[in-house]
Image (cartoon, rainbow, N blue to C red; front, top):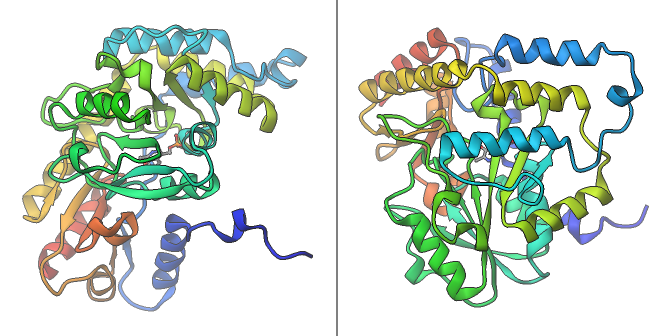
Amino acid sequence: MRPQPDRIEGLPEQYFAALLARVAEAAARPGVPLIDLGRGNPDLPPPPHVAARLAEIATVREARVHGYAPFSGLRRLKEALAARYRDVYGVQIDPEREVAILPGTKTALVDFALCVAERGSTILLPDPGYPDYFSAVALASARMKALPIEPRPDFAAAPTEDVAAIYLNYPSNPAAVAPPDGTFAEAVAFAERTGAVVLHDFAYGDLVFDGRRPASFLAEPGAKEVGVELFSMSKSYGMAGWRLGFVVGNAEIVRRLELLNDHVRAGIFVALQEAAVAALTGPQESVEERRALYEARRDRVLAALPGARSEGTFFAWLTLPEGVTVDRILEEARVALAPGEGFGARGAGHARISLAVADDVLDEGIERLASLL
Ligand SMILES: Cc1ncc(COP(=O)(O)O)c(C=O)c1O
């Protein structure tokens, strides 16, 4: 076989695959059973009516269900998402032109880079930020520059030359912060000034704490002219394994994404899309129950660990005391955390704690961490 093409060889290490392998290796060693607070996989299933709708449609023996779905997705699913944006986030969306349906927002954040960044152009990524953004930049043959997000993104100090795109993510994984006031307005102004486009990753949009309201980037005046938002079914409805997400906002970016999608995929199973309509339009209590559960777990983490904080998501972000590392915590407390440096240079000295684990596991993990720290 010929050598690997650059686009494969140049891929960054896949942070989560490496993390899972490290935790599995540690768990296999003899000793006290390991507590895994490193992973970020929703621990609650979708509400029963959603799973029932999937089963109901999947058992219909008709080609319209089991054949290729329309490549750009079901119109009624786009309408259901537009209704959610109107009712919950106060944003008007045209379901025809301003919504793309994709198999998860992880896919969408890579596709976005392919659709907006020229080879060699710059993409600004939040630091610390979600590591799959590194993959998007690499696959688009773009260059990555860090946008420090603490205490807030400093757009005045950000590079401006040949910036194709900026990724933002609030509530943020891993730093678990809500958007500081004015951040979205500054992002829109930066985009207008530089010609960059904005991707706001709203994957944890509904998981906000302390009475905050979910804050959509698209509610910002001018946002739709310069960017899009990713909305995921994974976290709000516990459907991570189902693979369904949306890109919402700028019609030209949505058009390009649908074009790319037509070339590389062939639609999403109709039953899954119908189940997502049921999730978005049916009873919404489960969204609030899920949010409240994570907030209660967050409260217990913050009460026990003074260096931890979280304003949303299903994570807490821990500042490690001098001399304490994630490796040491793994060895001495047998608790796995996600090491901060994997999320960017400014993640060093921190660790991400998952709240998406059963209560008794979390409590045992907190207790072990509290005695070590
Ligand atoms: C910040 C962020 N964005 C996007 C994703 C991808 O979500 P999905 O592909 O399940 O929609 C994740 C998943 O963990 C995430 O943490």
